[in-house]
Image (cartoon, rainbow, N blue to C red; front, side, top):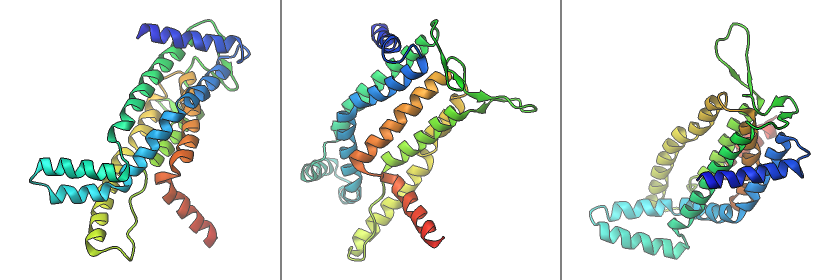
Length: 251
């Protein structure tokens, strides 16, 4: 793993000395963009598979009820359903693992680069220092702009990846309406717990990290949001867009 960190560190230093004009902030921005461009084919496949899985989730719930006492029949019916809809549950696992390993490597390499004698001043921030505000009378650090943006982009990214539950249509059969209603209840419950977990975690932990790491996460997340939109649309963010359009129309 140390060899991997060193490779990424050398890549950062190369970019810093060539196309980043000896500025670590610019180097981090370029690394964030390049890393997401490299992962675009993997993300596209993963997003498509995730969208298909969400679309067939009500059908999966039906199979679970139908074959609740027969695991073998459930497994066979599930595999047949996956085959019919072109879903490969394992397709998203390897890309996620590869991305996670690389992101950990980049994160650690950037952390190491921040400790070197490099130009860490970028706009208002020193990349080596946490992006926080200290206000008189308050005993804890207030998250700065980069930390807030990291949290916000993480929320948007998570919301888009969560997708939207299937809509109940007038032409649906009573059993289909019931299945979709049950799924929507489960979906809402899962979203309420997961949608805020990572954004709040970043809002807290970001005050402990250097602003260089926060900058990398903001840039990486912004690129990934655009890629997620290109691959699978707005996903769970669509409901907010619809509500905004309705409010704008009323105004």
